[in-house]
Length: 160
Length: 141
Image (cartoon, rainbow over all chains, first blue to last red; front, side, top):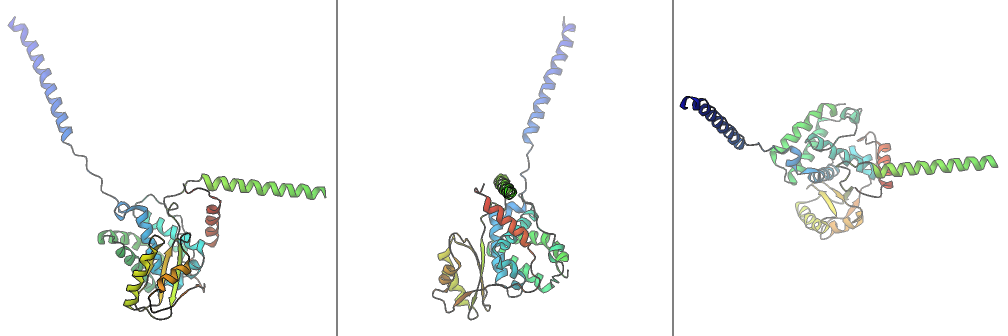
């Protein structure tokens, strides 16, 4: 009788053991921590409202900038063109920051072909953007990240 | 005469159909995230003398009265141009000018930019198209 109960005993031990390991696996799963997704630059900047505020301040800076405001004369003089320029700028910054926007304007090469934009003018424009971001409290690291992305457009703008 | 009447009716029907189609398109298309942002108007003002730091401080005080009506203001000491973005449905450019001039030692005049030579080439045609779409739109959603 004892010999007949050994296989049953072993089977029972095996079953209990496998169930124990299953519960351990469940504990392992419980200990797994899902990493919190890192906020995108778009989210860190504050979303579309913050980007539009930066864009508005940037445009005001450009208008008041004697180095480059004449370059935007035709656009500033026409309310519809101003509206489209602002929309394009918001889309460009939003898209560069991995936001839910799509830039639909001309490429930078097409847009600046024949204008012969100088390095001084480009730097003035960048300065106006930096001033806008700083005045609205954008963190330096986020400014640098955005400028790093937009700075890649420089060869398509200067000297075309 | 009969032919002219027929042509007139065809032309009228075509205009009505085109307007109807445009109206439907303008009101059924999905606005992008950026298109939902309220549009602003850009204005530039010239002072009759270079701005001082005192002027800038007074401008900051004056612009506080325009909160929620202007979205941005830019002015630099030593220059004589002030840039403003504002909601034209809430305030006019002349009201802005008189508010900014208040208690300040300068006179403001709005600058009318003249396009001379090549400038930032925002397509006038595309700008007009967007404006027409917005004119036909009856909802902001």
